[in-house]
Image (tube, rainbow, N blue to C red):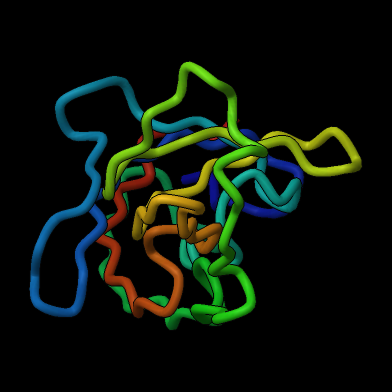
Amino acid sequence: MAEAKKGDQVAIHYTGKLEDGTVFDTSRDRDPLEFTLGQGQVIPGFEKLVEGMAEGETKEAQVPSDDAYGPRRDEMVLNVPRDRLPEDLDPEVGQHLQMQAQDGQVFEVTVTDTAEESIEIDANHPLAGEDLTFEVELVRVG
């Protein structure tokens, strides 16, 4: 049986859970997730979990937040004056918006508060600060 190693293209099925057991994502109802080990295409802890697995093997492990989406960072919660928003935008709490950084990179933020003169946005990943548990099945190597 082939063992997954850096540089290998792998296909996996997975289920991701929060500490309370809530499922936040799964591939079980769609095609397996495919990625190349060692390319940084998935979170580091997920990659570590898959590396060394054999085809057909199933494993469950916890991935601490530092190896997942990192800690929540207060400096990533920002107030944006409404006059810097597009005129046709009427943001609501919980709404996801796309922003563009000065280097051109596009990223998603969540509106966390609205006021007359400004809105508050959170640029942390929704799973930042969370320890995650993944159940992984290595479907294919290569």
